[in-house]
Length: 86
Length: 86
Image 1 (cartoon, chains in turn yellow, orange):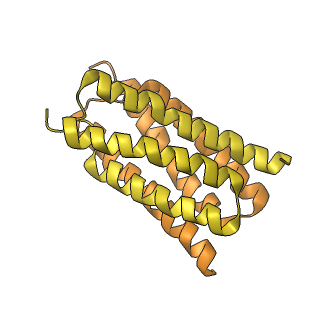
Image 2 (cartoon, one colour):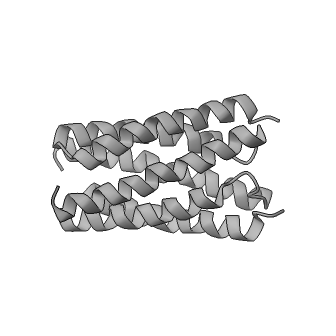
């Protein structure tokens, strides 16, 4: 991995890992009232496009991290649908 | 813009725009208790790296959207610091 790809790898590490405490917090609180449904849904949709972008351009950092982020954002969306009105 | 770059452009549009209703919601509710501080801070840090990645690789979609997202995530972090404990 060259230094340019390393920067993307670090960026992806932080943006992906950032989702973990957020998803964890919602499930711990069993509440997602403050989370915007539009945020959760649009973010999930956007990550799908970024993942395709990474695949067609062959960008390893974009592919790896967006794959993991998609799982985490799906969990966020599920938390919003489950706990959003409480 | 070729079709590959268009996919990234669409991805960036959705992930960036997703932040608007989330930030809006926190300022409207004047509450950010459910938002994780680690989420806000790590996301901001990650976006900075993605922005640098876009600049060094000359990826227009990555540069444009991450610049806007950085402003929005900074607003999210500020909302967390201001309303997080209420």
